[in-house]
Length: 96
Image (cartoon, rainbow, N blue to C red):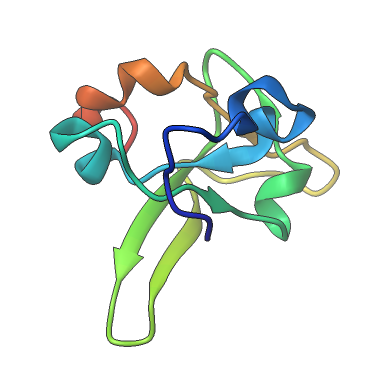
């Protein structure tokens, strides 16, 4: 987790492609924490018609990104997500 700070230039680095924000937080204010999610999600590629999605779950331990299959995925089949522009997060229904 790295907090939003106006002077940050994280969006101008290579890491920009790899961080997430909570759609619900971003819909209220663009000045939100960013989360780097490495693990299974880092192996997923983009597809317009993806076979998986990320579901954000917050509990007493923290904020979790759950990788959820949207259909049966065959052995050897690539797991894909629909990548989006961060400014489209205001329409959170589209991504969860």
